Every structure is written in structure tokens, then in C-alpha cells.
Length: 168
Ligand SMILES: Cc1cc2nc3c(=O)[nH]c(=O)nc-3n(C[C@H](O)[C@H](O)[C@H](O)COP(=O)(O)O)c2cc1C
Image (cartoon, rainbow, N blue to C red; front, side):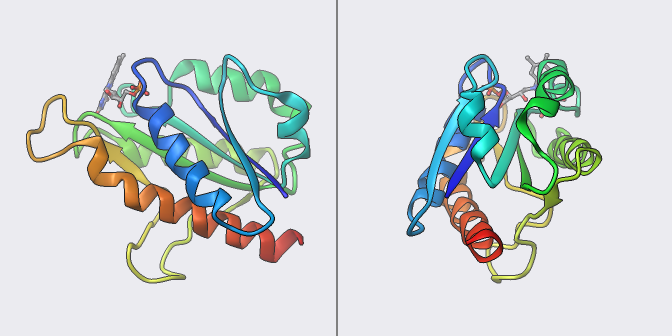
């Protein structure tokens, strides 16, 4: 089963987080997951995918205008309705609006008819309420992207597990 992770990323943090999700997805038997920047999405692959996770940096506590525009413009081509949908974010500050980013992406997914999933408390720790968030280490010395790797890999694993349960 194909799964796609589609992200916007200017300085590489969201790209890295997307690759961690893909790593977790591909650990599930039968999963074929790939990550794509919005600048180079394989539309055939994304159209065939049963599940898509979108990711964005927090830009003023919103998803980037480029990702919003990309979903607005290209969503119709990808047969999003009925696919499993997820969302993730990276940010500079713990209180920098990452949850708002995720909620905005999930709202777009719902409008497109996607079936939204976060794993929530289904599997216990780590509880991922809306979607995974990674805070970089630019401004907060106690933080750092690498601290979040395990959570993103686990999220990818859970997401692919759910997609397999639903669509295989
Ligand atoms: C225009 C702009 C606005 C940003 N706004 C926020 C913000 O509101 N909150 C926050 O925590 N980080 C903010 N950031 C920081 C990015 O969200 C953060 O560095 C992110 O990890 C960058 O992702 P990328 O490396 O994939 O581009 C902003 C960065 C830029 C360039």
C-alpha cells in the first residue's frame, strides 16, 4: 500500500520530520511510503496512496501560504476524498503555534473528504493528540529537532498500521 507524506520546508526541519514519519511507515509490512516536497510531488504516487500526511513549519502560527495554496490548487487532482489524512508541524518555539498549524491542515483535509487520524490515545505513550510536533533548537536551548525523532517514527508506524487495517 502506498502512503505519501507531503510537506513544505525552507530550512530542512519539516523535511527531516517527514523522513522520520516515512521511516516509521515503511517498518510496517506491505507499506510503501515516500516523502515529497510540495515542489516535487509525484502526483501519480500520491493519487494512488491510500493515506497522505501533510506537514508544515509554523509561520505566524499558521501553515505556510505555499502549502495552503498547494493543497487548494492540487488537492482536486489527488482524489483526496476517502484517503486517511494526517498532519504534523515543526516550529521554533514550544508555544509557537504548531497545534494551530496542525488543526488548519486537518480542517483542509476534512473539507476535501479525508478521514483524519492522529493516533490520539489509541496506543498509549507517546500520546499524539492532533499530530506530531517537533521544535527546533534555534531559540530554545532545552529543545532540538532530534529529541522528537522517536515520536515521529512511532507516528508513522501507527499511521501505516491504521491505513493497513482500513484499506487492506
Ligand atoms: C516567516 C516565518 C515565520 C515563522 N513563524 C513562526 C511562528 O509563528 N512560531 C514558531 O514557533 N516558529 C516560527 N517560525 C520558525 C519555523 O516554524 C521553524 O524554524 C521551522 O522548523 C522551519 O521549518 P523548515 O526548516 O522546514 O523550513 C517562522 C519562520 C519563518 C521563516
